[in-house]
Length: 374
Image (cartoon, rainbow, N blue to C red; front, side, top):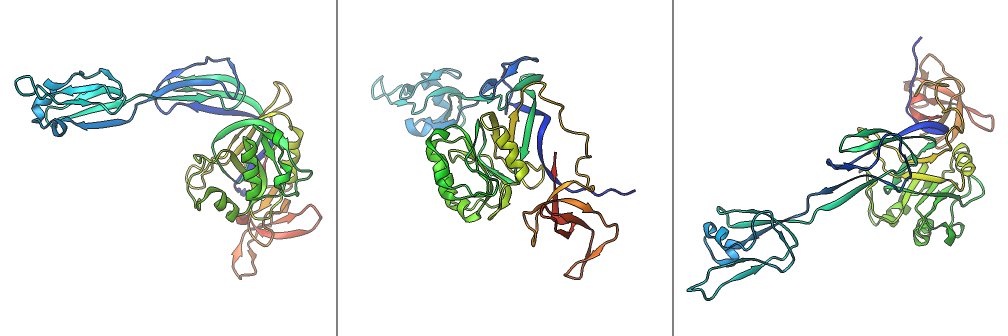
């Protein structure tokens, strides 16, 4: 029998998750297999080459390029400080010498007798890779990083901005439908992952930033609010590198949308626990979803998985409708007609039957839903 598949977001109370922590270039790994690490621990470090500063000494000293090496006070590989003498001309009869001081701190990398240029390489830029989530090191990547594994509660969102952060979960509203207002965010939420229900406003985001929250999570956001907060239209670029003072994750979509009750209850269950959050989102090749990872106590239960094949549409599976007129509504698959269905537009499409929480049912094109995995 043929099977039907559709993309989905993972929301699960217990799964075994692996996080790959890798340096951009080779460096030193600070942990070993079997080590227990925390989110803030440095697991690998390296140094990126500093900025390149070209200095045209031939022009500055009015010399032929071939004479520049003889005038150098520093050799290739020598360190040099800011405003330290770099080169000095021989002058005329030992007089009228010209001295050029270096305007950069770093190391003399090359001296060219062909161009008369000196390249000064700036100080190396240190790069640290942190654990991101609490867990156990299960593999070391030689000179590159490591893989950390933990039993976690795991939630994927629809959209996010801002990079990796972590903090204790604080639920700021009473229900999954309640919009997140500025007054819901208090001063004692500094460093926390603040959880709302319905739409978050630009005022709420600014309030969270003002109190020093690590992240803010809610069901929906208005595109105009996001644009006002960032100061520009984000478009469809890859997110996660924004430097806006906190990480923002939307679990359901844009507009007046409540957080799925299942997601809200899962976050509320773990209030007070440390969570690792990453807002990075990419919707094209190599899809990335924003994520909330809540490490659990070892042996807290069997990891989820195996109940359903990933991506498989089956009777009873939870889905979210992602097109009008039921946009944002969550229900379960109650029927999978085998024959194409004639839509209101007159076109034919493969459909499924959805039963919503209040008992009503609807016929929805399969392309208009996504699974809620877990």
